[in-house]
Length: 116
Image (cartoon, rainbow, N blue to C red):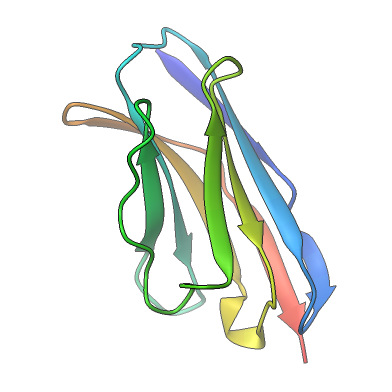
């Protein structure tokens, strides 16, 4: 079983930056995909971006393209999301995911609030 621990959320003013981290532990299969999703109040959860253990990444969601950057450290089995130029519409709970084939594990979520 895999456990995910997220950190780095908080309150920030518009235009500011935050860096989210998600560390995986437990029964880690070396071939995996880690990613970030978010869910804003009253909206569906949406994928932002993901990166495989080999380094390939999915396309960024249009809403965050050019502002958010995903990276990962395979030694630490940790994925990061650098969020720059944050906007009030980025306010959401951000979730980390860890996927091996068709099995996905979710982090507990971390709140990001962007004030105008």
